[in-house]
Amino acid sequence: MDVCAAFLLKLARTPDKAKRIRLLAACVKVRRTWVEELLWEALADPSESVRTFAVKEILRLPAVRIELAVKRLRLPPWFARSSVLGIIGVRRIAEAIPEVVRAAGDANVDVRRSAAEALGEIGGEAAVRALVRLKKDPNLHVRAAAEAAIEKTSSVRFS
Image (cartoon, rainbow, N blue to C red):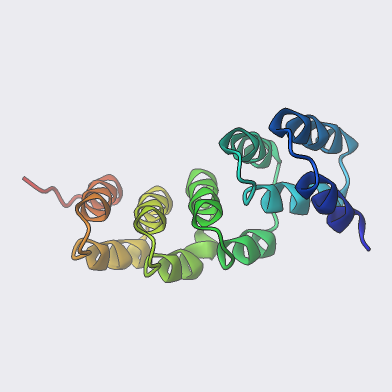
């Protein structure tokens, strides 16, 4: 078993969310390559405080491995996918646009809304094309996020 898998197992067996955060914090101090994977996987933790810790630590990394983000984006639960999309947006990872566009078709409304927000942060022609499609989403919140993202990334304004 690799080190990341061992820590994931330890996290899963630790019911106290404060202890899970302390365990992740200790791992972050180690600064090994497996720590980034552990943080991406921690986005699936049932505790929002653990997920928030993981997001903050991923955003503090000097660079992220896009393949880890894509891997986590393709897996359940929905809240992990939303967190990944948020990170992709904040870091403006343009290479991830095809995966963000794929996530824009997710069954979960929050994932689609997060995809719209990420596309708005990344910008560019491909992002705007996907956002125009999201403007037709059946959910009001997704449409509003797409509209705001289009306004952010282009000169198009909605009245």
